[in-house]
Amino acid sequence: MTIDLLLRDAKHLLKEHGIADFARSAEILLAHAIQKPILYLVSHHQEDVSEKQFECFIKYLDQRKKSKPIAYIIREKEFYSHSYYVDERVLIPRPETEILVDEVLAQLNKLQNEFPRVCDIGTGSGAIAISLKKMFPKAFVTATDISLGAIEVAKMNATKLHVDIEFIESDLLHSVESQFDVIVSNLPYIPSQDILKLTDDIQQFEPHLALDGGDQGLDLIRSLIEQAYDSLSSHGILALEFGDGQFSKVQKLMEEYAFKDIVMLRDLASIPRAIFGKKTINGT
Image (cartoon, rainbow, N blue to C red):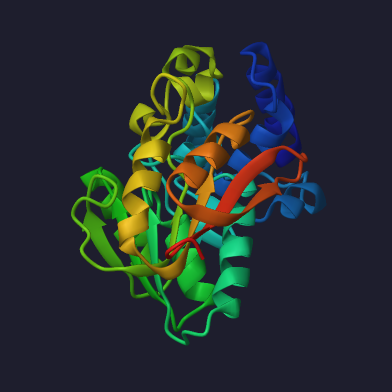
């Protein structure tokens, strides 16, 4: 069967199963099945696929029609211009999290310390920690996660992308003894009662441990803000991602725990998405 006909039938199938991005899904999955870039599908639309490629594509479609995320099907997700291995043990990296990396890099470049210590809490796939290490090689980067499965995935990605990172299985900072110039984190921030309202691809497949932030979505964020003060160096920086409508509450928590110079960042949709604060020493 030709690429053109396969795409036509695949788009129809996925649309019938209620997949919103049916066209994009079909194109990405077919391109991956034949191991070619998406543009190849256009320039070679009359080309026949092999039996092996066809069977691979059908397996992909069978998973996608059940709402399984593309990233979990092809075991791959791009973040900050690098390709990461992902599976159901970790949350799929989101593009909005890249603003967190951008700002942490900007802050690292302002530090007097040539070899800053950075800690990524709840690292998941390792996307934040690895991106920071790739872009700021002189930094000593530690990454933690409560999930051993997530640590295993993050280690795979660190090896794949050739970076040296210290990984620690830890509930937030409990098993971490070092002090850091920057602590960064994208912790679960979805209120427990909203988990069932998520789309099927998220609710059914992504790890709830990486989604559920407790009653108001702030349980882990609150705990990390409380713990971070003692784990930061003088005037160290805490950088957090949070959910829609949570900025004022997170800002108040940071102020309560003696953080100053608090800055809010918006994502590409102009939604408040990240917050930065500096540790206060004796009120300064």
